[in-house]
Length: 114
Ligand code: HEC
Image (cartoon, rainbow, N blue to C red; front, side, top):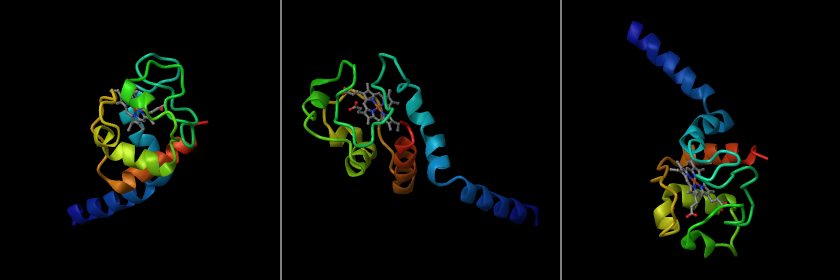
């Protein structure tokens, strides 16, 4: 009985942690590198629908080659699935987020960073 109670409680917790809240949790995967005003990674404030590789940052050649593009929701989703497959040769040391719902939640959260 206790196990079942725990299970139900877990379900409730999962329900609470969706959408932007879930995205905020997931952003901890990013914020180690992506902080405002640091040299480790470009600033992600307002990144959704921003032109690619246009912050004050020493981007890789691979990322610079994308400068004509824009970080649309679709492009971000593709990039965050597998940064290396999406933009080969970029220097972001992150393997990607496999779970589609998690990527969606994270991108929703990124949209709140203005
Ligand atoms: C290990 C450090 C690190 C982690 C962790 C990391 N990034 Fe990055 N990120 C970088 C670096 C470095 C670049 C620049 C890459 C380049 O120039 O090739 C970058 C570039 C980007 C860009 C392009 C920004 C622009 O100005 O065009 C986006 C978008 C991005 N990261 C999102 C994320 C998200 C979302 C996460 C978390 C899921 C994340 N990154 C995790 C280091 C990191």
